[in-house]
Image (cartoon, rainbow, N blue to C red; front, side, top):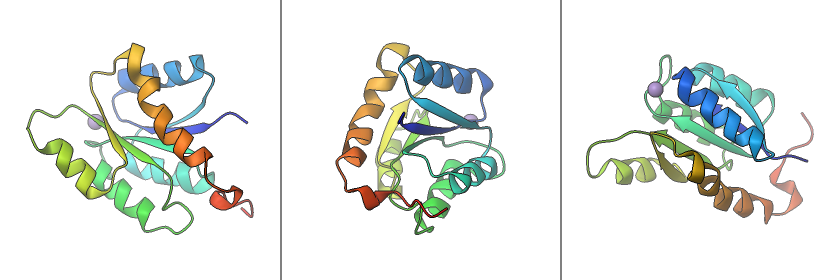
Length: 135
Ligand code: MN
């Protein structure tokens, strides 16, 4: 089974680039263009990993994170923030909020997929009951 990766990103160019890279490297990407759509997609079919922009309409990345962590069926899915941040300390803020990691924009095609891999391996090493199959 291909790993299913949900990308939540309101910038079409970034979204297309990440989708393209994931397909090229053999993953199965699912896309959403705002936080509400992202939550809907995650609930409809829980992904193996979520890549989430911070600044988005409807719900921002922090709200998406909060709602995912509050849902027992989705709470342990790794979530990586993708954002361009100027301020020193923003990375700490993102990790303190509960994101599993952080990828900087602009997306670097040569390293994007490499940055996701550790989080997929981590999940793959867990027992089978990491996934609910009754929905
Ligand atoms: Mn954005």
